[in-house]
Image (tube, rainbow, N blue to C red):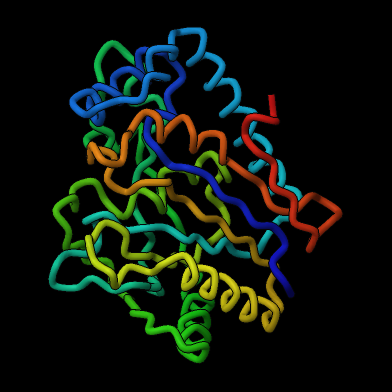
Length: 277
């Protein structure tokens, strides 16, 4: 069975705020002390309200497509930013194939209220659990090694990074309620090294090869599979040379995309965020 649907989006935290106050708080936290592009001055309450409406529409399309295709499992391509990885172990690619559920967080509306909440301190509101298809994860590990990729394998959750209190990689968990509110489809987590300043980080050509290798493995399997990638243009929004935080959130919001249309599996369709108004 080939992949039934492919999806991609940003996971920048301000995207999941519904108010101007929420967006402003995340901007102040991440970007207020770095040089900003002039367009930021145009982002008033009306502009942010438009962003929020477009985000709802875009993720609504992803959610609807996911529901129509009803996959047996979801492959999630996500980066680790000092969460599970630490300097003692920085694999380029890691697959988690353990039986333990992934206990993590989303941040929907964490800055919209009277006070900004630290989401990992409020698991009753922001906590979530993802079941892992361990057998399929092992299959993908063997397959990718066979395709020439040096992939690490983990069967136990033991966070080593400086952000261990915040749970697993936020790129893995933050958007999951937006895609499948019931969290009822098991995942196959494929994690990439992202924030290490090293030429060893996978480049675009190698990432493309990785995606093609994953596709080849999917073709040999009987299960109906979906794939989702979550990332951004930058991995260090506080670097002045990269410009960003808030601009990154906005431009990446325009890249929330859905690949594949119900009834047209195998015919890629990218739906830019800005066209979904």
